[in-house]
Length: 478
Ligand code: AMP
Ligand code: ZN
Image (tube, rainbow, N blue to C red; front, side, top):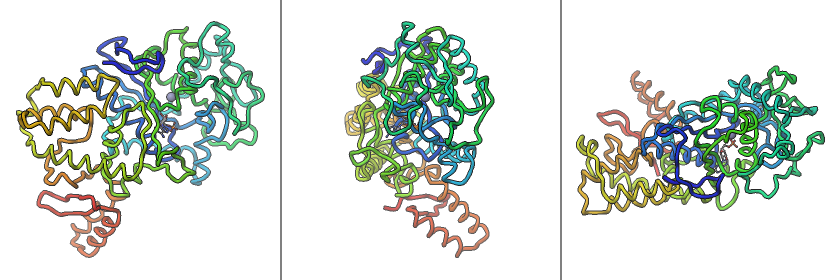
């Protein structure tokens, strides 16, 4: 299979370092708020990559981090290591400490993965659980002479790294990584591209209670160092695939490469870099201040099946920006409903599941996957297959089962009588799930009026409940 490697800037044949093993690291979320549907696009991409590797029989070890300390608002811009502390800001806003913020949003993130049918990574690594590893890595960088101290932290010296014959910023799409104008620049930094490895609390900076002793003084790790420390801990000094959104390509990832290769004596850190293009909303940037930073909870509360969002993501190639509108999600929901309806006509038997089919559809599906994870094309092939009357129902059923291992649309669900509108309990928001439980309790106690009240509350949130002999069924209310 081939995919576009941001490092070589071309499509390359995928040859893992130790086939059939594949080591893959995804830059995970900063758990200071609910992830946006933009973030979820990137995690769905990561899931599609993992599922594709597995489809082609690779043995994947997937590691994802949760950033719960150290991520400052300037870190994603060119002005690394400055700006507001995201965790501290959220803690202040919600009137709790940074640990509670991490607990709340970390749990929400992990719970929400199943809503998009994203397979849980093999390792979920929290930055605060790996402070020792980060300190050890900084020590190595310091020993090699690439770290220096300022009043607010320990920094990586990019110019020195380059003057010793190393290349910095190979991945970057910027001509020059600039220090931004929006936030205060640390005048003690030797160069604008230098970034913090360890931070002290700067004068006037909001303090949070996430701080640790280190050889340089009390403080907390810089954002970039966590990914180097944790990826190398779980995947080794060198590994196959590193994935993240396109905003990480020009600062975060070049910084990871510099830190890691400096510490390991210049072993090439990662073989293939995959960057997902951004999701736009209504044709523009999404942002909290713009009121369009939609979350998966917004999608649920508006009555959509969360897998319709997954279907929407599949409809655009990952290297192109995709434009989200609620109308586009309507179309995706309709597409998914129609797909389920077609699939439900096939009838699934034991035989269908066991049979290996090797026909032109399978070949073109695999060709699409192998061609830089071309999901829109693979989805089109699925549609074409379903419409082809020359293929038997059981062959179609077998192919749908195997295609869905990658697409992850849960096309083969048992007991789907009316695939137009049935959703599974796992796809309901926690609020609705709690109401469903409450209603069950009232019903068990034969408090019918109260049970009906709760049913109405659930109705207001966009769901209809139907009691069937096999249990409760949920329909999305349009
Ligand atoms: P953050 O929580 O800001 O560290 O972002 C987590 C991940 O989501 C990173 O891989 C980002 O590149 C990615 N990301 C952020 N915004 C978007 C967006 N609008 N579309 C796609 N991916 C995004
Ligand atoms: Zn990272």
